[in-house]
Image 1 (tube, rainbow, N blue to C red):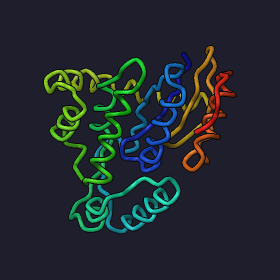
Image 2: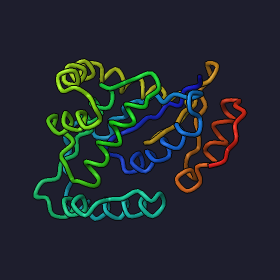
Image 3: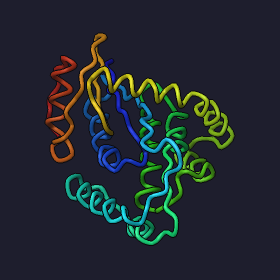
Amino acid sequence: MIRLHMIFDPLCGWCYAASPLLRKVQAHFSEQLSLVFHPGLLFAQANIIPASYREHIIAADQHIATLSGVHFGPAYLQKIRTATELSYNSVPASIAVMSVVDATGSTCLQMLEKIQHAHYVDAADVSDVKVLTRLAQEIGLEEQAFKEDYACAESALQAQARQARQLLDKVAARGFPTFVLETAGQYVRLNHSVAYQDSGSFFAEIERAGDLNLSTAT
């Protein structure tokens, strides 16, 4: 099995746009590929977003929506425009994703999708552990078990973030998301810039880098 690494952030709009692509990757490659998530920590602590920057966020999100087709809900847009204090902190949501690590990455992706929908559609506060616990329960996780796994993941997060930066350095990349294919001990950075509109080209790139023999039909 080859591994597709993703350096991500739950509050990154482009990572939100990439989630449907990852679903297609999973379906296309099935058991030949596993997903590995690395927390990039775009907002490594609580950051107050000034009012002067909010229209830039909305414009960027509109561009992402046009290019990828992902939906930014009215409640989210209203919150960006009118919230008295708008604060972004990637840490709690990143911990939540990393607390549900499994062999194939499927549960991580499911949790990430839940968090992204809560943030970008429902305008929920995904820095609130109570919100994250509810989302974990919605994907079938038991509350107490999630809380215990969350505490373990919290203690490991900074080391994982350092590993994410090391992987970015290894493939001479920056920004989120970054996709890196690991096969036979080699790490190859993938170009996903066209994949939001043409998933077949991304599949073909994975096949070439991983020396796989699969159809690239979408």
